[in-house]
Image 1 (tube, rainbow, N blue to C red):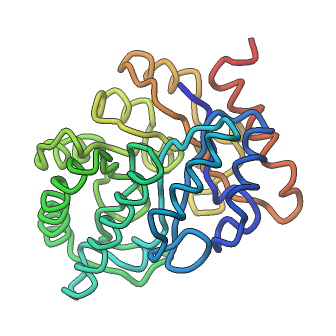
Image 2: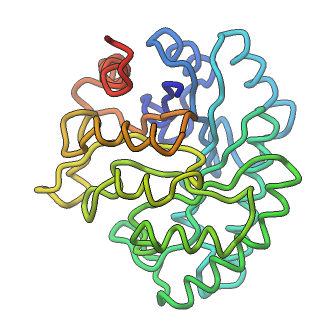
Length: 282
């Protein structure tokens, strides 16, 4: 299992202005073996980025000696595949296609995808649950051949979208798509508000393609409950045991966000915490 970190962890990452070459070098210097690239509507890596630009990033990563583990985007909070607006649904599918292409150009094999939104406290998107299921399933089935052609897996994320709320439901959704190029992008911290990540891992099993590591305090119960790794309620020894049982050996990508008080320390502290979680400090 490789220790990885998300682009958003760095100041400027959230708005896409962080220099990607610098991101790669700083990640490597902090002890990370891999990184997750992120693209947006604007910024350094965006919907208009071409093959030459992305391959230049991949070349830079090879020179630095760091792997590109996966690709993510926040655009699914703006463009939903379950929207009542047909044009928005088509735009969301275009975002998936672009993300798959960026991942292929970058030489990685996974894209994080939010399949739709039933409801969300930080987004105006709202779709009845039954319709969300129908639309999301149809969209992902349509996109699976694109993922297969590009050899990049679609990773369905468990996230605060009011949808696919249990591991049994997530498993059923993935099995309904019935493609080896569609699996789960499992976020450890996102499930703590309602359940236990180790249960999700054991139920999803081999369907897990990529993993985000976050931590969360149940007693808070809101977005403010997300905390630094090993400072929340995730039972990391049990989580890692579950990963070993299911045979997951892909990247473990820290999805953390820079605080205002010590952004420069977050990266090194996260690296050290992941070493403890993964047993690298023994």
